[in-house]
Image 1 (cartoon, rainbow, N blue to C red):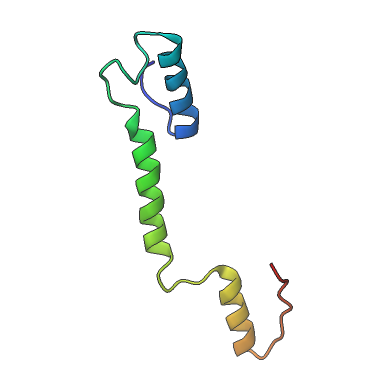
Image 2: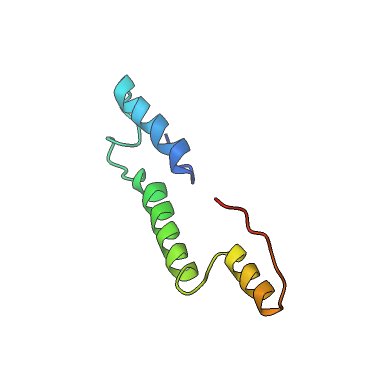
Length: 80
C-alpha cells in the first residue's frame, strides 16, 4: 500500500486487515510509519477547530434566539 487516504476510517481498516492477512508490505509493520498521519491530522484538526470556534461562540440557534428576543419577537423553540 502506497500513500494514505485522508479519511482514517477508510485508511486504517484495510491496513489492519493486511497485517492480519499476513502481507509484508502492509503500511503498518513495513517501517513506513505513514499510517498515523490521517489519524493524528484529523484528531488535531478537530481539536484546533473546536478551540477556535467554541469559546464565547454559542450555537446558531442560540444566536438566532438572542437576536429575536432583542427585537421583541417570540420564537417557539422545540424541546430536545
